Length: 257
Image (cartoon, rainbow, N blue to C red):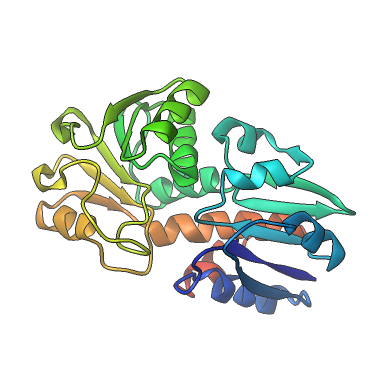
C-alpha cells in the first residue's frame, strides 16, 4: 500500500515518521512517501496511475485540491478544504480529518470549546478546518488574516465574522488559535497582537515541532495551551484509518513527535 503527503515545502513535515510507525505497529505492508510539489498539475493522474491509496494534503493545497477530486465527504464540504484523499478504485474522495484533529487536541488538553469566543488567525485551509471544528463544538468564531480575498471567502462560505488584519482586540476572545504557517514555514507578525494575552486565554497553535512566538507569549502569561502535536496525531490517525481500516493509532503517532 502506498500513501503519502503532498504540499510545498515539506522539509519539516512529521507525517512520514508518524505513518511509518503506524504501518510498523499495525503489521500492514505499506510506504508513506513525501511528494513536495510546486503545483498540483496532473495530481489525479499520478494518484490513479501509480495506485496510490491515499494522500494527506498540506500547505498550500488544502482548498485547491478540491478541484482535482471526484467526491467530497461531509467534513470536507463543511470546511471547504481537504487534508486527506482516499483512492477507492480510481474514485478520489476528499476528507477533512483536521476537524477531528482540532476537537481531539482540545479534548487531550481538557479544554472546553462550547460557549467560547474564538479568534482564528489565518484564512486558508487550516483556518477553515479550525473554524468548522469550533463551530461544530458550539463556539462563536471570528477569523482574521492578511488576505482580504480569502477572508471574504471564508466569511461567505461559512457564515462567520471576520476582522481585518491587525485590528482584533484579543481581550474580546477566550480562545486564540493560530492557523497560519508562522513559526513553521514562515516568519512575521501574527494577524492579531498576541502581546496582550492573559491567563484566562486558551491558546492553540496548529504549528508543530517548533518553538513559536505565540507559545512563548502564552507560556509567559500562564495561558492554557492546546498542542499542535496532539492535533497532528489525531488527524493522522484518522487518515490512516480511512486508508487501512485500522484505528487506534493516535498514541503510536503521538509518540513519534
